[in-house]
Image 1 (cartoon, rainbow, N blue to C red):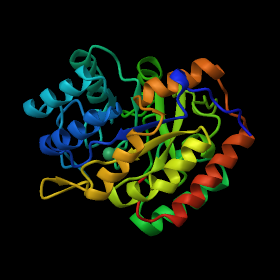
Image 2 (cartoon, protein in one colour):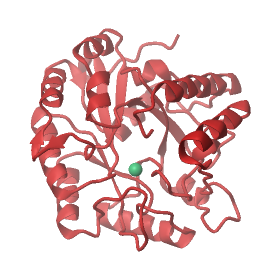
Image 3 (cartoon, rainbow, N blue to C red):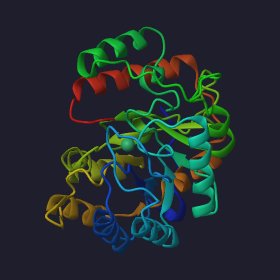
Length: 314
Ligand SMILES: [Zn+2]
């Protein structure tokens, strides 16, 4: 059992969101973020710094779109964290990833703090079957072959590959997202985070997140009962979502989402971006290196979640 964290300013719990840019547009950004901002929430918006020149598996707006960039810079001004979601929406070589990181730095004035791999990008870091170890890797391959016809090999961490950028990941970024769980209390599902994994040395710290890839699964995870439990447990929630995934219908924000977020924002929570939350836990608990036993337990819990949950892309 992990000791309870004393949240700053006498807050009962912490809550944040990592928003993946899949399918993003200026309209979605403006509608969703003016709503979150007015509620007093500050979260993490991940971006693609550069536009790709190939066909993406899943695409969306990038920082090369002038209007989109203007909105993203506005979010940064207002206290939202800007995160990194690979250089662009399809596989990038080392040169392209280097350029993506440089442009990120130029646009936002710092290297990325929190990052997440994008689906289908082969330069992703410890992704695909490299997310898990040992026998679970075989199980992962079997499941993925059945579902997608491939094992989604990622090469960002493989030295010698033209897609390698592990050294840059370690040098320039701090937190990388891996496992996703159904529990709203992400810290209960993954009590050791942020943790360093010596078997995956190019990532400084890993974090987990809670299931909410689209508006339906998001609303299930942040239900009234779950919000109350999160507060009771003094926990922390990092929702992983794609705000472009049905949160907006005909220009209007999903009603149930609005009700749930308004309710949550009135509770005594600490609503800060992913990096602020993780920095606080890191300062409070210190550097943590995950043990093999803890990693195996996490991997198994995630595999079960993945098998049980076919809705998410996470
Ligand atoms: Zn993505």
